[in-house]
Amino acid sequence: MSEFQPVAACGLTPQPEAAAYDRRWLVANDAGQWLDRELFPKLAEIAVQLRMGYLVLKAPGMLRMDIPLDVIEDDDSVRHRISLGGQELDVVDEGQLAAAWVSNFIGIPCRLLKVHPDMGEVHWPDRKA
Image (cartoon, rainbow, N blue to C red):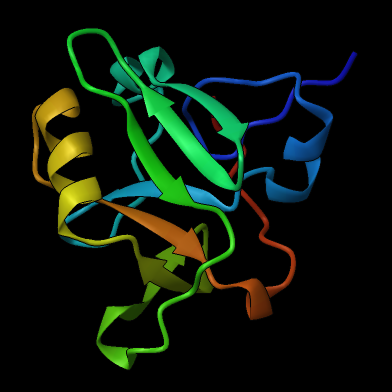
């Protein structure tokens, strides 16, 4: 049975429908650098599942966070370019509530970003993810 990781560096899910969303989100610091388990092992404690059209995040001591799977904000102010392993990614910020949730759990200011669906394949760095 395969497992998928909708949010890079966070928990795995065996849900077959998660294959289409494997590593489509990531957590980045305020400087736009991807946070991975190597530097932030607490990311592994974030449980991820898909439920009724939502990405559902759960973590110890936190309320559940539900984020719509396929909604992409058409406001260009939430679109950003970040660098990941020498590759430029087009990403969409999931908003202040998601940023506060992830920042409170990790302990540093950070953002939850979704790789824009037009981006295509992402080549993730060879690190513990």
